[in-house]
Image: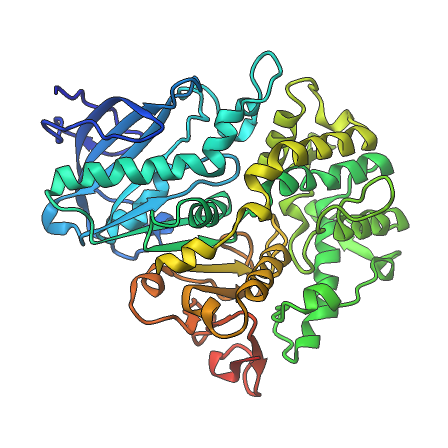
Length: 512
């Protein structure tokens, strides 16, 4: 069939002619392929800050887009596949995930392709034919206010499976051989997609790298808007400089308890047990932008306390985790000064999720009352639990498949409290027992001081894909560090300070 050239979606890519000839349409049991386009891309070079790969060589790829639909669901899903030249291909395939409310991003394919993988990404159909930003949440409900269940199913688990099936068929036609191994890699929403893939389609991948997964999205979505409900009820927006003062105080209070005063809360159990009382800061001064000062008030302390506790229902029962101790408030409670006016800057994906669950009925999210907020929270749970809930993540068949699941999470994650993932891991160990079965197929590492997917004050995890692709099981993950390498410990082990320079990785041991 004749293939049309596809315009490059990333700037600076040189286009040539179509590169996939005489292709047979991929087949899927529950979907139908509508179209395939291809174009050759020469000298793909991307800065290392986007890939984590220093001095990566330029590569040539075949850029393929497959359009598919699920009959009766009125969706148009776009799958993008990047195919390195045969002599540069490592024989393996890497599917990539999304972030926030997006099912996928093309830039997430850069690192795998520059490492020799053929890679793919999907929009899950939730861009509505490239007309909306997924983070807006507009795709969650139709114009008539009804829930767009097929697109929620796509994001929950179906789109990654379709992408894997289609991509493997395209790879086999392009290279005349099937990939020797197939992997999935993603963070946040992408990390959750990895867990969903393991549970729903355990045969799709030989290995899954799922970082900071947004498990329980039906709870995370509305929960991350909780700070704005608190500040609305208290009738005050807290300046960012005041939030930073509380963040510093939390670290000062909890950091030494792990045995090493290094600016990091390194033991996950401290996130549950460290005692911090916001009222301690009342009357103290916070240095703000423009060399101005703000006196911390009792109202500030109440707001911080409620944000740390997390959302509660009308009976005072906690619905979800609060902000993790030591994480920046700027993740879900950011405020900015615009033209002299304090302005809320909510977590974009959370605002989009809430707007979608409100079914386009509310134009100003900051005007909703606490009772209205709790009602939409309940709606999110009713709609999303069967698609995104922890009860959907049975890993029994994944364990039996022989595939591997590797995760790491920052203990200063500002968007998703890491305790949810740690609690889930504990439940998996309880299900499978302590005979080593879990360690054989599922390993989780904790990154002290590291934020959501990246950032923060702690040693940053570097490319973890080799730890998944190597035949040996990883006992630790490598990181960048200020002076000497500091390894991430495999949960439930934790870094124990043995003495010496706290900035020297050799001063710590990973112990139970």
